[in-house]
Amino acid sequence: MPSMSPPRRPRWRSLALLALLLAPLLWPLQQLAERYYRDALNAQSGQTLDLYVANLLGTLRRYEVLPPILSKLPTLRQLLQERDDVRLRDQANRLLGGLQQQTGADVIYLMAPDGQTLAASNWDRHDSFVERNFSYRPYFREAMEGRHGRFFGLGTTSRKRGYFFAAPVREGRRILGVLVVKVDLDHTE
Image (cartoon, rainbow, N blue to C red; front, side, top):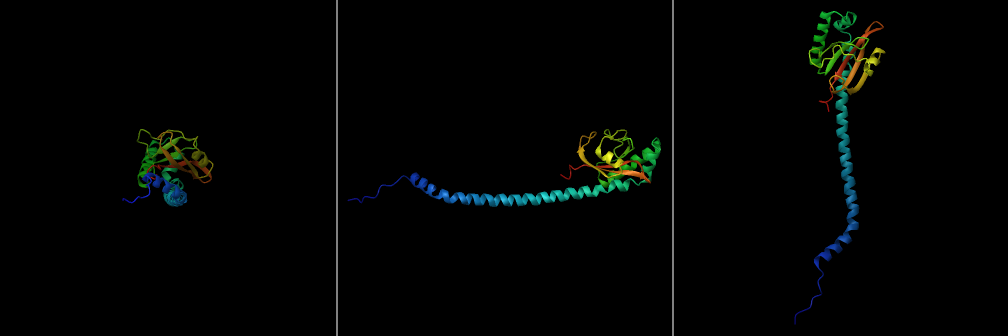
């Protein structure tokens, strides 16, 4: 006579019962794993952000010193005193163009006290700053007040974002004009 074995439950019922028993144990494990990987991701993101910030600050510091140094160049100071001298204007444009090439700045330009741009490194391009007036820009107003001007914004002529550094060009205590260096941050990003 064949032996009688107990009736077998369908396999899916056993699996469902096992899942119900293990679910309360797996939920805290899932929370722990999620917290661990989230913390690791946050730490990695923080380190990456710190590197980006250090790179950006290094780039900005490199250009920040240029306006006060370049504002002492005799050709630029002389042009501010003799605005209508075509020969001086050409010399200043070429000087600024060479300095822009050497420094990697986006544009370097010289402005009269009324905000009119007298010379610029981009003097020979279609989007030249020469003869444009930027007296409304905060960096210009700050420099005309004798301070170092700084501004991050969209260029009204170039339509490119940039960081602007400006310094007054002085003759004794008198401010003759403003020298500006615009830095393109796209390559830094």
